[in-house]
Image (cartoon, rainbow, N blue to C red):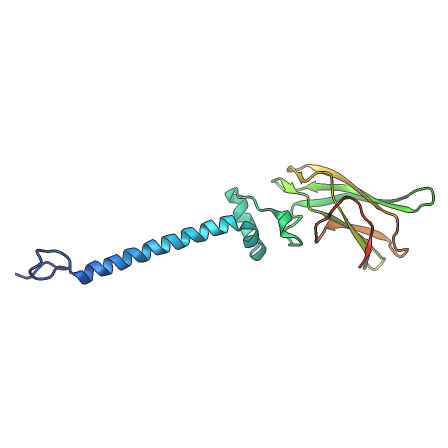
Length: 185
């Protein structure tokens, strides 16, 4: 009779060395693949900010998984300020000589999750919408709960005469203190 399949003649039915080696390589390949995928998952969880910086749709995935992404650490990334809206922005000139421009308003969290409040920027614009001067400032609160609002106020002692309006946005860089003087752009 012929020896059983997978065994060599005269070995008592044990698989051949070649078959054992093939199974061992296959098992080692699967173990390597599992370790590689596991390492990628751990790296993606640890380097969340970098992943979101390179691939913004990952933000929604991390949010669903309950893994927070530090939006403030993303600098001028488009996601910084996501879920924040500026409302009731007003300007007024104060001082005995009308020498101080005050910008005030509300920053509101329109999202369904807490949001950090990054540095903000006041941009003075002319009638054609061109930026004339800007300065950064911070809000007293560092974050907003869903639906929450925070008041802001900043002022400057000098501004271009051609300025006709102000735009408040999320600043591209971090602010070192509250208030500030405008810088020409």
